[in-house]
Image 1 (spheres, helix red, strand yellow):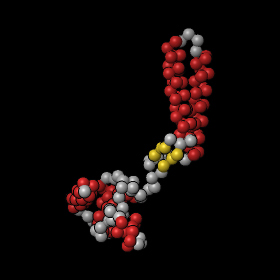
Image 2: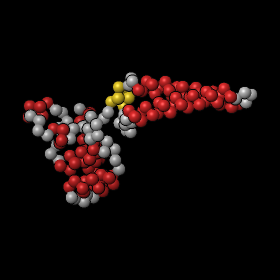
Image 3: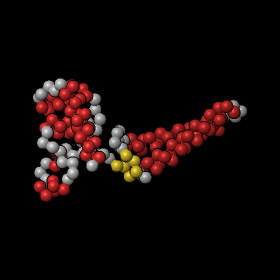
Image 4: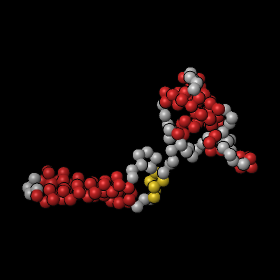
Length: 159
């Protein structure tokens, strides 16, 4: 079983704590259910909750032994940045299909998007561009640039 943990990667201590909480809840509900004598409606609710908690417990046990695939922050498996190809030998660069162009603005945009995990709002992109380049970029020109980058990517994929 593989689990993609791109967002919110819990550490082992957090997982172990969650397992303990679920098991404790199951124990408490089992005790309370046994104390309910003739309140059939409450017994049914407790039973339904117990079934759900047992399913959650089984799922958590599977997760505990799962292979976790982490997507390192800043790495986009679908695109190369200048950092990815920096210092590579010319023979290898000739073998690559998606070598980033020498367009500095495009390279900065790709790096910023990758550093943010692949998604961010335009305002953050404008702020990050300013922080990295010291230049104030016009919103509409960045929107146009993003559109052209998307169309160029679509054209590459159609080949």
